[in-house]
Image 1 (cartoon, rainbow, N blue to C red):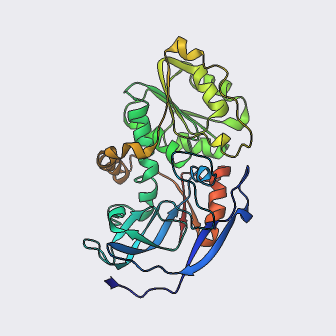
Image 2 (image 1 turned 180 degrees about the horizontal axis):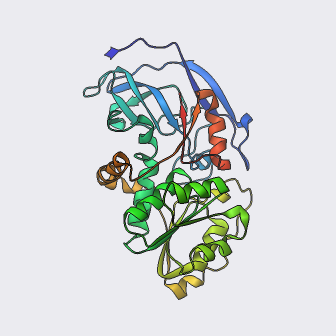
Image 3 (image 1 turned 180 degrees about the vertical axis):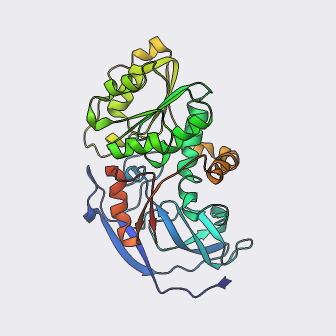
Length: 339
């Protein structure tokens, strides 16, 4: 086994109770543990950046879902990228940088087969958690495959200033959308969408009914709706959907912390008239697009055609506050914790 000087303590976040409604600080604990040692076929990674994402709220519940819940009293998981500091695996050397799924901690032991090598010379390490990572692939697959985007479509994106939404809108523009509209939660984010990301129109959903603002921004209707929010946004999109319109449901952050069942859209019958389609998707079903995605989107990132924003929080001790910030919508682009 090859290794560098190993640290003495590993700080990691544990889930200690299952949140009801909005998560509270007392549902979590920052725990000091021994730095784990890599076994056969494993590597030890010093995490440089870890990801916090809205879907993690669902894993804090014991309810049956598409992924196993976080275990109580155990370290949580999430995307992370870092440097290999000890290797007990062929093909992965000390000094290599890898992407893996053992975030919420400073040091992680990872099976080499589950670690994806990344090149910090080709793009900043943090982008492998965002624009060139899971969130970027989510945008790419959801728009192009699930929503069957085609040149000339009019596209509406909710949560458009977030990591996924901002990339959806830009990919749509790069692929020839006739019009791209975004919603966000502040006037500053609306300005960013239009001036930085090239959206044709955007609105602050706090400034009035979403349905009215969407009709004003898209008087000719929308062909594709990429849903990150649910609730009134989904209902508004159905109301503005054109003939043969498609809705890709990526997330519904507006209902993640609800303690009571949330009513669905009241206008679903309109799908009959429009011959519309609503389809949910998970990025994990679309990793066959990974190589194509990295090649196409990586070129856009390097050329500057696709812009991205990151909200970076410093220190593992602030991981939890960064997660709360994602649920509140504090972030512009991808929320990342730098360790």
